[in-house]
Image (cartoon, rainbow, N blue to C red; front, side, top):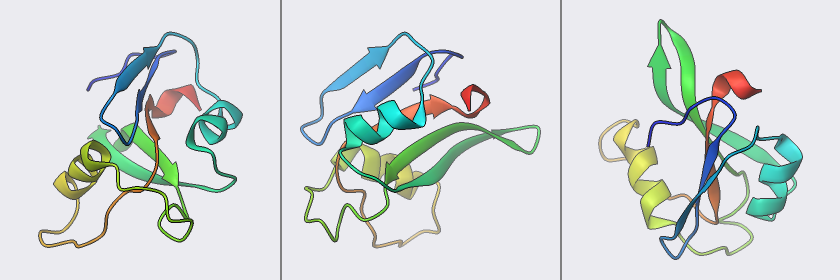
Length: 99
């Protein structure tokens, strides 16, 4: 899962993953996710600062997008135990320094 600068990974709802070897942009991630509004899940920290983040569709559930099992697993791994929420739609995994 570790992402180098100027690359990012797409995790689709069907489980497919794609590594993109270019600097990510919010417009590209919104297009991939099919959304206008993104929220951010912080997956790892380095020296107290976010390092790897997962931009997600902020209203994916409301738009009835399917659950993304892999993204939900990553999300729940960093949440309080028992968190019932899921990630809906395609997501990106990016290095926070690229923004």
